[in-house]
Length: 196
Image 1: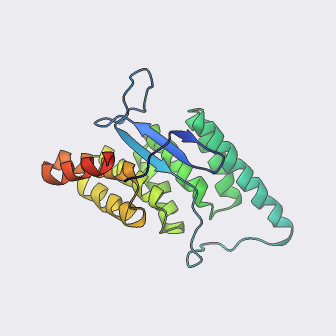
Image 2: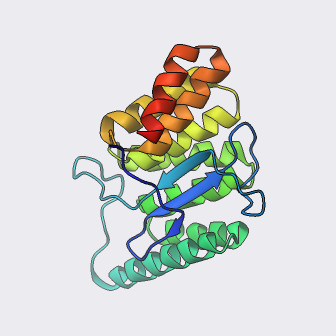
């Protein structure tokens, strides 16, 4: 059975972004319909990827501040204050350029504000910082889906599912990409996996 998705954000950093399938409009609970879910989570970066070494000494104080900015950004994101969340992520990244959580969150905020170039740039940075981050691949796949680049969407969603076979939202997004390409056999298979 596939894992269930949550919307909102938990203290552990699990974050779900909901958007309606077939358009780039953020989910509106008054519409009562969720068909496409993008999940983001804070995952540790592998030791093989470290673009900038952590500072030591007095600069280490900035690390806590960077994490504080990233946590505040997550709270603002949960409140749908995407512009303010982006500003906090900017601060976190300025203090800690290897903060994958901030890149991932800022990319998701750009995505929901329909800034697909900004979203792509930040989500690409997030996957470069942590190539095992299924959520960043899944969200970048959703960006490709929104920009009608279905083959690229399927490629990123394949990676997301290789990393996390229980990522139900990635099955749903990949099904939408196949459906829009006219590949109904694969679309039905992925839609079945979404609800299984």
